[in-house]
Length: 389
Ligand code: APR
Ligand code: PHB
Image (cartoon, rainbow, N blue to C red; front, side, top):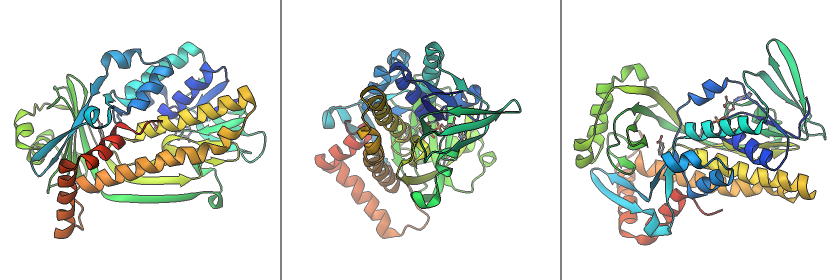
């Protein structure tokens, strides 16, 4: 098989890149290790920056998001029971949209079917060859047979554990990493959300987050030890712990029920530089990871492919490689902003095992500063709602 751009990975980064390229008349093939159903069964975050909402609209897949998504004009931060609402619209004239990553992925997959663009699912042993030459190739095994795709470029959109970044020689890439000494235990429940907007709560027992997927489905998290086992958490234990960490009014209003999903995710900050090697371009989790505090992961993935699609379109349409040459630096500038914000919000809101009284007072001073200084609140709101493109 031959194509112009081979895309590894059918997450939001790969699918959005494919959609933008297809609409510009650029041939692309997606090669994914898992089945489509498996990809759609993963539960991920669900807050879209305004720039992500605009990209989804531009890609012509905004209809369901417009109907089912929930616009949030602000969020609540709570600290040891004291809570404060930050009004993004008042502070920076922007808002966010609550619409699950799974739904964005579903909308993109449907659009890809309509476009008639090829996707290969259940592809094993995906390997990338000759990326430092003019004729890269992607090979994979499916149904016991080896297949090959010859292409002009490879887009590595295959997540943190994918094949793309791993195929770059170690001396051509530099990585930066922090693993946090705790995880998030998350629960999905068919009960209305406790509040109209998200509540991010700091508590001495650990961080808690109240989020949502729809007016009838909620997503809640509590910080837990890194080695915690999900089996040790009955629904009852989860609800008890969540209630203890929330401001009293929220704890009283909480509607509990049987969980329909429960899992533990580790927290990590990670960046690989540069995001290009020869004809291979990395995008999304393949190049960087943020802790979920602040919900930047999906937004960063969409930001990368927005830049990458623009650069590839300029290559094919105008014969200009300036965009491809500048891709890594342009994407990384946005990535590091989101890394800073996610790290800062994680540090502000979590209880770290090695914290002393000074560090705890610093967290409180940071919270008080956000509440009392409009300039500090504006900076927070700008990062949360997403800096303009
Ligand atoms: N070959 C082919 N496909 C692969 C391989 C491989 N070797 N390894 C991983 N994949 C696939 C995964 O199965 C997955 O479907 O690549 C896809 C990567 O998708 P995501 O993990 O969703 O990553 P991305 O598209 O960059 O989206 C980033 O996902 O993890 C969240 O918080 C993150 O919201 C952010 C978003
Ligand atoms: C979620 O709804 O899963 C969610 C929301 C906000 C975050 C992280 C996760 O910061």
